[in-house]
Image (cartoon, rainbow, N blue to C red; front, top):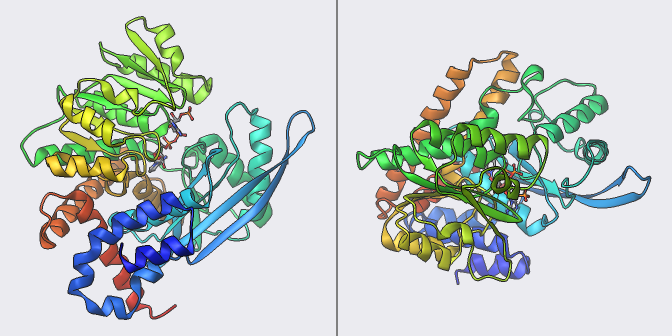
Length: 449
Ligand code: NDP
């Protein structure tokens, strides 16, 4: 184990997701450190793995029956070398310091790849919006923002959504910030269109993930037309990944949620996708209901004790994991290869565990890490910030074209960096190296702060 990994593990024992994310980057950037001894002298690894600031706070809130509850709120301000902290808020019962530190760490490199000026951060709470009324969610968001508002601002730290934080939650959070600060600013992204949001922001992560996949295939003069695709999750990223895949002529056959997955051999077309959007975004139901509605679909209940995830058991050409971290293990990866998968593009953050990634890299299939493939979401958040600063709204085509150009540029940046450091075709190494170089060079320019 490298010295830096050892010290991170000893200093923050138990933060296994954070260690996993750090290990991947440390291994990728080894050749950069070997070529640039001044980085060691400046302790860049020690600095980049230590958050600039960690904020933890109590969030008391009251349910509809008058019962008081307490959740824990967090904001990790990881690195501001190239811009204000930027990254989503996650509301999910699994949220803890390790998960948010891994996400904030990933975000630093991802944001650097977008070509925009954004540092990295992440936050959230172990609050579970599932099964809560709108009023309960509103009261929680107001309590959360009562504390968070002291630490964020349009030039300081600009949160967005993530798992469990969509348009509804961003609305309540923004309303409370505005009331407390008496300021209407671009302090959050993912806002609704008529009060400062950007066109294409809801679509951006999913669309970007598909644009990245298309770029990879393009290197072999291939396209997504006619490809069978597995998509996991059924939230924001999964829905718009599926939407763009359908538009480009691919056949999407799966969706999932934390309870189970559906497989539709006939393909999920635009009408079926509309059903999923209404089911998940408006009725907030379970994906099982897809199989009740469409008899050609098969629903399989998730089994936490199984050694693999049933969603990855089907024959297909491409896989788009869009649910959560570590949803593809080594066995899943082997199943995917056995079923004909030749491309994996990560819509979620760190959905493949390290063993699974090694399976993909060994077989030299197209593997796009989340920090590159899902960077479209934060990129359009950056464009939302730019529009807010100018008090302008760009048309849909303009934002979509910018998103396409950014994804193209990230793709090239990854390939170029991978080739320069002796790992041609390895998008993971390329993403880590290119993101790292941009951030550490800015840190060195700014002195020991
Ligand atoms: P949503 O909350 O909209 O959807 C999350 C989906 O994943 C839901 O279908 C959810 O099922 C499922 N899911 C969540 N946790 C688990 C779990 N532990 N096991 C199985 N399924 C689970 O979130 P997003 O679509 O926004 O985010 C999905 C992924 O994409 C995350 O990794 C996020 O960090 C990443 N991402 C999101 C971006 C964005 O712009 N939103 C940007 C970049 C990355 P259920 O409904 O049952 O909870």
